[in-house]
Image (cartoon, rainbow, N blue to C red; front, side):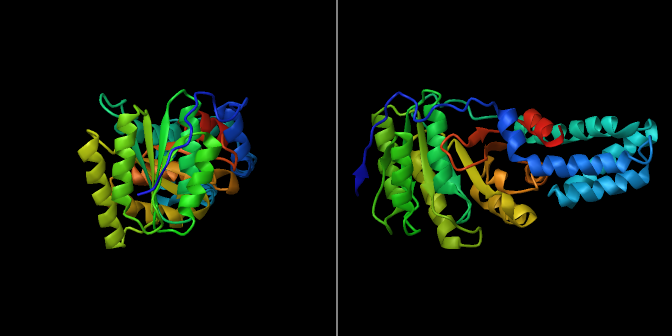
Length: 324
């Protein structure tokens, strides 16, 4: 087993972004916001009161923004119920009601799965899981920087020993974020490198142990068994570990990625979502579909390539940025 221990200096790896979540997310989902806003304005342009025809037009707009059929149906049912009881007067009221429904959907899984409490003993252990190409290794490095910026010490574990260049990529991110890293050779035993990482994290009183795992599909029995072995290894050394299992999803895959994630979460014990490449899609509604259809909270959103472009997800600010 080869170990690489870099520095874990207390200074922050990068200057924190001067913009808040709202401003950065608003910029990231600008195409979705412009598309939805223009459609809502068009829907109510010919009539003061929102009628069934207007709601049908809104339904199409939401589906094309990647909210999905199931999530859109829930929203439209609530809006139709409101319209039957009390008329919806114009675009501003329609927008406000739509915001309320979106916030309710995003808040529900957060209440069911609140952020894990800081472990009483040992580091918090975070597994990053998902299929190849979603940005797991990059997210691990950005997440390390996010914790560093909050004065938490971090250890990265390069447990993706399957993909060529994954370990080298992790080394680059460890250096950029100024954190320690434990690795082994390509093709090595992921559970063994995790054992070393967990032991080192305990010995050095590290706050956060972030584990990058191999990309896998839920149908790959051998790889899923390997992930379960890693879970047992972590739990043996650190009570309650892993404390978070974050599924890394590529926002640009939309509803196709959602179906894949739905099946994956059933097999991997996922507790939350890291939604990457949100800045690269005109369909930011996928975040709402995740909350509704997977019943899992979005914990972080990736909005760019820089170290500080991983944002802790804020449902209220996200909805405001999406609808203005």
